[in-house]
Length: 268
Image (cartoon, rainbow, N blue to C red; front, side, top):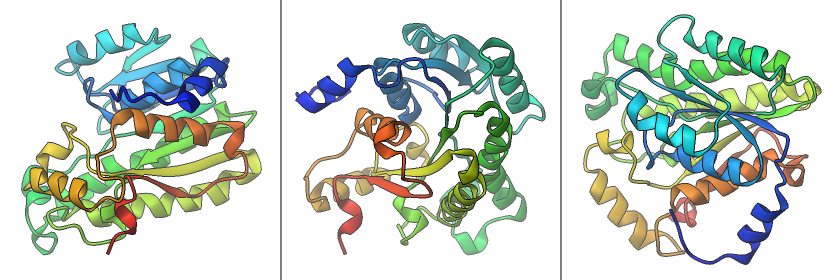
């Protein structure tokens, strides 16, 4: 976590602006996950949490974090397995009866398709990547809608490769572009329910998911060199931005893609 002093951050945390809010966080794999950074900030700002884990192999890494966060709900959620996402929302309905925030931070593509050229990607690999990385967010929105009776916020994690060509991002570029487009359409469709929808686009981060990208260390080094701020962002930076988007301070914002990358995305 980033230990740089920031009085504004401290003031926001002390305000407990998310007190009484209920937040679902999907995608924590370990303490380095973007989803974990978001969950920590949500909790520090007063929100109650529902945390999911992928499978039994992942559970020992995620369960201690869920306990640390005081999560009220801890449940398995592999969106590729029929019924698991639905079961999470059934548990939320039973335990809480409503939901204010849902954060989707999951993406997957078969290694061969991820590390190969887009033009060589397989039909099945593309379908799997699109289903897990994009369509599952749409499914999440459909399940969250009836629980967000007083409005709410849906958040998805994207990357700059959705809009510009990032070498070695390959298959995930078009998939994340579809995700950002889905965010805009969901924002339009759910706006009259006072449900706001956003994509958050972090700069390069050392996460388990990112480690699957070819030459990722080169990408990190170039990001530090080119970003106007001159340093990488961390998971807390992403969490603070995600939290802001869920608060009344962002009540008239929806359908956006917000970059948290030290200005890297503005550079040619």
